Image (cartoon, helix red, strand yellow):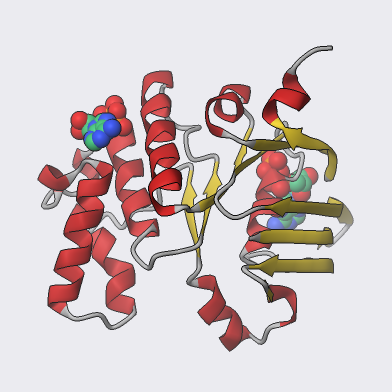
Length: 232
Ligand code: ADP
Ligand code: ADP
């Protein structure tokens, strides 16, 4: 479902070039939960942002659902990006909109009718367990509840891939557990492919099928979670 082939990314500022990714290749199969773990500055954010081309790789190919994104025009890319949803560490909700209207937002952009939007948003809020919060504003929600809203919004356009950028890093351990449980159940219910980045081993052990370790922009090891993290 996701394939990175020899992806490299450099950032050049006035006086310095940083090689954020060097020759990164990985394959995430349909329905898998794939985790990339590494320390701060290892290149995790750059890697996940290359999957939807928020960052454009300098070299290499990015293929999602059989389409090579790295050779598309901007307008073609806009269409393909609908298949790829993303959630973030700090949730990125719209503070002036209610929970309902946050989840409705991507559907409004698609020009969906009011009744279609109502039906879809209700079912998404049900899925993430926040039906009774529909009329609340983000400021009145806990961190875990905010991430649930962000997950519902991410699923609005029926994506094939969900990218999770340190999605539980701002949450306490108990809330982290409940969000990971929700992601796992969505992965199973919708056969949604999930690529996540994290600096927390516990996240990898709790929900990932496969894992890759990133260090100084290079993928050091990848494989099944048990294979990689069981000491011989
Ligand atoms: P991580 O997510 O693992 O903390 P990042 O992908 O954010 O790592 O960063 C990898 C490297 O690339 C770091 O050295 C970082 O400073 C650098 N970097 C990331 N984004 C930029 C940018 N927009 N401009 C310059 N350097 C960047
Ligand atoms: P927090 O601990 O920050 O309140 P949680 O993520 O634990 O955040 O829970 C957010 C909301 O989702 C709570 O109102 C909770 O009752 C509800 N909730 C928790 N787990 C589930 C679940 N498995 N299914 C549906 N709703 C849930």
